[in-house]
Figure 1 (cartoon, rainbow, N blue to C red):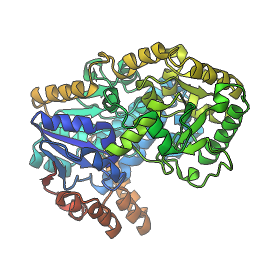
Figure 2 (cartoon, rainbow, N blue to C red):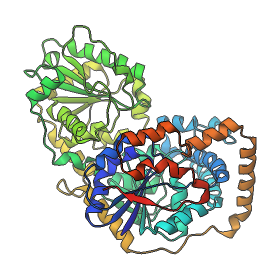
Figure 3 (tube, helix red, strand yellow):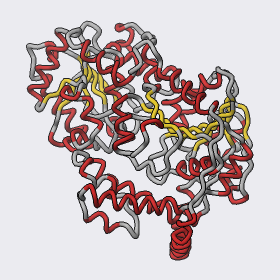
Figure 4 (cartoon, helix red, strand yellow):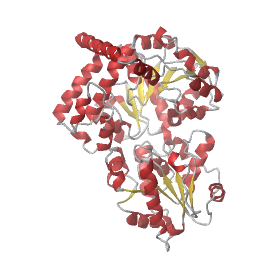
Length: 540
């Protein structure tokens, strides 16, 4: 079976490397492609030494510039409008982020903070008509005909201005089965609208299935629950270093427990606020001089995309606080994953605000704490997905509303580390591996992709003739938008959509010592307008 697996950028391989490996091991040819191949290149190292027929495509074509110019503002506006629904009353954080993304001529929508369900539905129906009037890309259709995939798999699909929407639309126009893999626990409630419905959507659990049917209006029969493949790598892993060896590596005492603080992304935890909060948090822990936490060391693990402010932090004479690793890094290589695992495995308690790493710690059976600090109220309780971690919704977090209460909870965890393990295990069983703790999600996801391919081609999907007049109006708007755009902005648009092939980006690929196909990736992108052939080179 030939499988086209398209990810937004190589960093997504840290989430789906096990899926790609297993597909190849089962004898399938996996064609990997990235919409932004120059972003998070470290993700490519996750497939080092992979067996089977895995190939990198030389290029993925884009829709015509006219439809990019008119489609992107319409799609962003639709993403914002859906947050005006009463269903998103508790999602102020996501709503504000999408409000700032609005482009002309839809910025007037920002004046509304919420609408009735009926008005929201009416607006969404109108944006649905606009999407239906955007035609399938002939370039993409020629590309897919040349590659002849049995299945097209994409992730994450619902980010801002994602070119994957046009790819799925073109695949449906040819009758090729399509599958969307949900990449993270927040994607269905904090990202965009699934404006083109694929044949199958793979979600983690029943909660996400409800989200897919409620917030994305997907038919239940198109949603398959597989579990979360991203966490499979932690279940059977063992620590590389003993606790004493790890403490020596990090330069902390081995005769006392240590607490792990997990940093959050910049959107949830702005650098200055995070640094100030951690200083207050440390001061609160040190004030408990007669308790266990007063003697414990602290290891701070920065978020990989929000780590610059930790580089030069000085803790004066406090030798019980360490930042590890000093420069934030994603666990993509085996060494980085071992460091990440060992840090959580040997920690006596884990603390964080709002990050996926909280679930990583839960998979390892650690008791995880959080503080509902006033400065982080919006990125915490202002998101729908954070509520799933709260005890009242079946979550595992030990929640405190102040530092004093938090210190008492953390002290209890250090004294009785096994006390709350059952609560953590219950969450992991329902949220991460709903089919059983001994059933890896990767295998179930691969099974779902194989079933989709075995079902064969669908009836081709074509645009209804009743949308032709609207298509002409959109085409005219697109031409006017391009004509009014200054040349620097046109160059910026081309760079945003990846048609730039600067020497610097080309050099990045060569320095990674990747196969020739990857090094040629950007050279091939220059031929985008000619309707490229789906050439590839075997890399594993």
